[in-house]
Image (cartoon, rainbow, N blue to C red; front, top):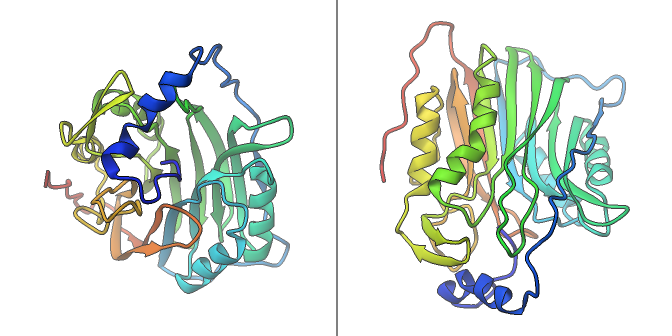
Length: 308
C-alpha cells in the first residue's frame, strides 16, 4: 500500500487513481517485468543460532524507507527474531540489495534479496528474507502483472528453505497487487501455492497481501465492502492447510484507524505460541510477528474459520 494518504478523507484517498488517470496521456506501455537476478549472502563466519524448539518470524512492508536500519535492528532484538520477511525494500537512494546486505551484517543474519521493480539504472526494489539460520533453495517466482493504469508494479514471490534447529521450513515471501478484485488476487497467488504444493513439511507464507475489502471497477473506481478479499485469501489458504492467528486482529495499515489488515503470516504444520502486531515508525504498515513451534508429525491441522 503506498504511503501518501495523510489526512485526506479515506474515500478521496481511494479515488486518487481517478485523479491520476485524468492527467495521464497514455497507459503504461510495454511490460517492464523482465526477471532480474537476486542475491544471497551468508552470515559472517562464526555466527550460530541458539539451539531451540521454537522460533520467531516477522513480516513488514518497509515502504522503501532506507532509514529503517536502526528500527529494524531494534525490532529484531526486541522480538528476538529468527526470520524477517520484508517487502518494498529499496528506493532511488539505496538499492534493495545494499540495504538488505547492510541490515544482515548488523544482525548477523543470512540474507536473500529478490528485485521486483527497477526504479532507475542503479536502484531496484523488491523482497527480502533475513534469517538467523542458513537459507537454501532460494527461488523467485514472477507473478501476473496487472495494468492498473496508475502505479502498476511488477509482482513476485520469493521462496527459501530455512534450516532451523527443529528442522527445515519452507518460506514464501509475497507482495500482491493493490487495486484488483478477489478473483485476480487469488489467481496471482496461485503459482506460489502450486510451488508450495510440491514441498513436504512445515511451511510459512507471509507478506503484504493487500487484502482490502474493496471492489474495483477497472482498477480505478473503488466500492468499499463490496468484496471480502481478506476472507477470500484466508479460505483459499485454508484449503491447502494453512492457518493464521491474525483473524480479527489489529489493523496492519495505519490509515485513519480503519480496520485494514493487509499483512499476514499463514502457517502449515506449525503451531502459534504467541503473536503480535507492532507499530513501526517510518512505514505506513505495522509488522506482524509470531513465535511458533513445529507440530508433531501427524498432528491435525485446523482450518481457518470464516469470520467474514
